[in-house]
Each structure stands twice: as C-alpha cells, then as structure tokens.
Image (cartoon, rainbow over all chains, first blue to last red; front, side, top):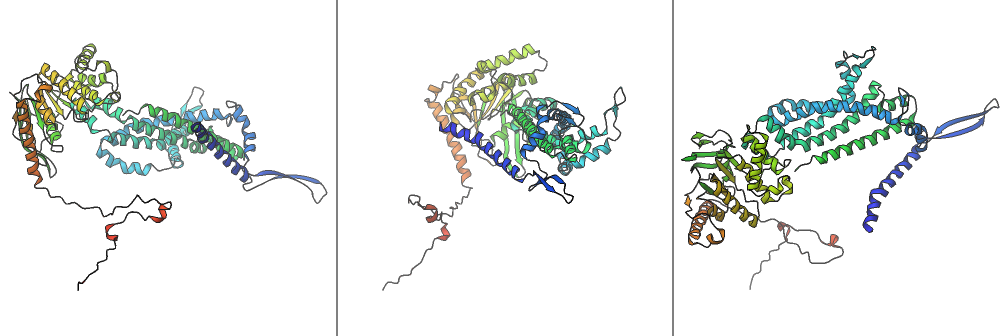
Length: 294
Length: 303
C-alpha cells in the first residue's frame, strides 16, 4: 500500500504540482486586460482597454486556451494555407522532417562506417566534421538556397512542386541532424569487440559478409542511439527552416502568428513542438531498445 | 607427418618479447596440450598457429606451408566463446558451415548444422540465443562451430577456463568422446594440469613470460578411453602429474628470483569505528595519516 501510494505520488502528483507551479508563474507574469472608462476633455465617455502586467503582451493561460481552442478542437481543418488545424500543421512539418531525416541517415550511416573503419579517413575528415558540426541551421539554410538555386521541378500544370526552398530545407535538416548518427556509428564500429572480428577472420568471411554479418549487427545499438539523437535535432531544426522559408507547418505558423501579433498561438506552437518531439523520442527509444543485443 | 611446425618462432610487441625461440611439431591425429601460467603467452602461441597474428621472426608452418593468415582448415575455439549474440545457436554454426562449404545447397547445410548441434547435445536449444544459454552450453556451441568446418586441426584456447569445475569435467568428457570418434588433430591450451593429462597424448609446458619458451614435453601413455574416476588414482597419472607440476613450479621459481618487489604501506592509520557517538560527524575527524602522528621523543637520563 505504502509503495503504491509512493509510486502514485512520485509519478503523477509531482509532475502535476510542477505543472501547476509553472502555470502559476506564467499567470503571474502574463498581462491582463484592464478596461478604463473615463470622461475626456470633451465630456465624452471613453472606454480604453489596455494590458497591464509584468509582461503585458504575454497572454495568460486562459487566454491562450481560448485563442487556440479552434486549432485544437478542429485539428485537421484547413481554412487557408497558413491557417490550418494544429495536427495538419504538425503533419506537414513531420513530412518534411521525415524526408530530411532519411536523407541524413542515408549519408550519415556510411560516413560513420568509413570513419569507424579507416584511421586515415578519420584523420582526414575528423577536423572538418568537428568544425561543421556546431554550425546552426540558420547558417546552413541560406547556403542551401544558394546551392540549390537552380532546382525547379514542375508538374503538368506548370506549378513548381519542388523548388529551391524545398531543396534547401531538406539540405538544412539533413546536414544538421546527421552528426549524431555519424559520430555514434563511428564509435560503434570502433567498439566492435575484437572477439567478433577474430571470429570473422577465423571463418575467413569476405569483406562484405563481415560487414553484413558481424560489423553491422554489432554496431546497430550504437547506430540507433545516433538515429534517436538525429531525429531530435531534425525536429529542432524544422522550426528554423519553416520560419526562414515561410513554409506552412508548425514553425511557419509560429512565425506568422508572431508577425500577426497573435501571441497565444506562439505558445500553442511551442507546446505542440515539445509534445511531438517527446513522442518521437519515446518511439525511437522503444525501437532502440529492440536492437540492444548483448 | 608433421601437420604443424613452429621453427624458432619469436613474437614481440615493440620491445615486449612474448615468445622467444619456440619450436613445436604436431603430427596428424595428435592431441597436444600446452600448459602454462596465465599471461605466459599461450594465447599468442595459438594465435600464431591460427594465423590471427604473425611471428616477429621464425616461421609457423601448416601442412608444410608457411602460415600467412587464418584458414578454414584450422578451426578455433576461443576462451570467451565469441559467439555472435544476434544469431541463434543454429545460425552461429551455420555461419561457419556457409563459410567452409560455400558450394553446398541449403538443405545439405542445414543437415550438417543439425548434425554438429546434436553432437554437442544442444539440439533442444538450437533456436536459442547465446544469452539464453549457460557458459557451458555456449562453449559447446563454440566447439560445434569449429568442428562443423571439418578442420584438419582444432585449436582450443583455454576453452573451459571460464566454467565452473563440474561443467568443466562434463565438457572434458564430452569433448574427449568427440575427439575419440573424429580423431582430428587438436592443440588444447590450458592452465589446468589435470585437464591436460586427462585429455592429451602429449603435454608441453610453457615457461612463465615474458619471453616464454616451450619446456620439455611429457608423453602421456595412458590408455584410452580414460575414465576420470579411476585414472586420478593410478600411479602413472600421479607420477606424470607430479613431474608436470614440479616443472611448472620450478620454472616459476626460477623466474621469481629475478623479481624484486617493494611493498609500500598506505600512509593511513586505522580508525576506531566502535565508539558510538550521536554527534559523530563533529567529533570524529576521519582517518589520520602516519605523518600526522605527533610522536614526542623524551630523553630520559638515568641517574
């Protein structure tokens, strides 16, 4: 009984308390509408509404909910290109992330293997990788736009279906999110126990077979750790990419609503991004757990 | 006919000499055991024969040809089993069968795998993964994997060292029975004199490292099959055992005289933990160092 009590307290009550505390702080610093009615110099009654508070423009939790309600209750509505239900936006963002992410894995996994297998390759490329790794997505995107300025795929009706900004978006997501996979794969390949390699040698396995039957399975747990971290970064980058390119999506919506002074929606977007990121991470860690061998 | 020959083989890593001027001849169908202290270079010796390492000088020959790399005609059983954890028992063995007999069809391979899995009494666990098996069972898989390649020589590097005594005895008997049925040439590395004498035709001791050498061989003329229950009590076995152990101890003793050891005592004084005090953290000041002891020397002049 005591254990159950303790379990509930710790896993349920404490997070709720923390949430309430944060909500309270939010409420305290958020602004509120104050309506003042006064008689002006001409004798007219004038009603002015102004916001007061520590951070006047920050909407309160209740205001945020009221403003966001329609986006949450009709999550798949499409009222316009940049006015869609929140899940519809999320879906658009996820689609882009998935494309960029798979592009990243496609490049990062072989690169990681080369780094792990060849000391010469490591010596040659490691400094370059260490320099490129910390570069922000905001810096990569303009380069992507320049790099792919000529890209233009038209459909039958003559509309651009895949343009420079699409290519640049994918490029940015891919190049920012590939590094954890590269590093983890390289570490994983280097960490393959000598015993397994000895087995491969004693059995005279060919290079290809050694890679497929020994190196790859032994590296898989490391690779999946890299995949999980990469996915986290890809999701992080999406906001920056959508902001800069103005694509419809959670990040694009966020930036648009900031420009439209609709601040409640910013908070809605932030919460959505957080929740989706959390779900993605949980999903990947389940997959990751499946591949833990030894 | 000499199947394996080591001629004046020396193996060194930088200036660290592991094996020095080693000569060894193993004939077809022989069961040779090499015994030595841990760290004396036994694994290095067998790695040279397996082709996992190359000698610094001298030459290692197999079937009259210089060993330049690993070969499928030399099967190896590792001390730590070295099974691939993502493959089942069957698949681990199948990997070796596939490597050794690439021209066979799937059915023939499967049959071959089943035969060797059965030989080591693991048919019931064929679909299990190594982590679901005990140490003894894992080592059996490793033996089955090596045997399934039908090698000309089986190299075993302390195969039973990681097992408990009871499992070790069972496996010794099982492997001994398999050997009597197949009569493959075997080189068995061990650190257990009883195991060496029970199994081998010939026991060769290795001097303690560094720069280990092979000592004089001891022939084991005991009749087979050897029964562990009766053999231990036999006079011949006891005599052989005494000879082997004496040689090993003498070799270690000769080594020891060259070692100088210096013991440095830790600079700490024992602390009395028995005193009970509610304010321990205030009262006790923790361990003292020897140099902190205030020793006062008082000179007393006797009148």
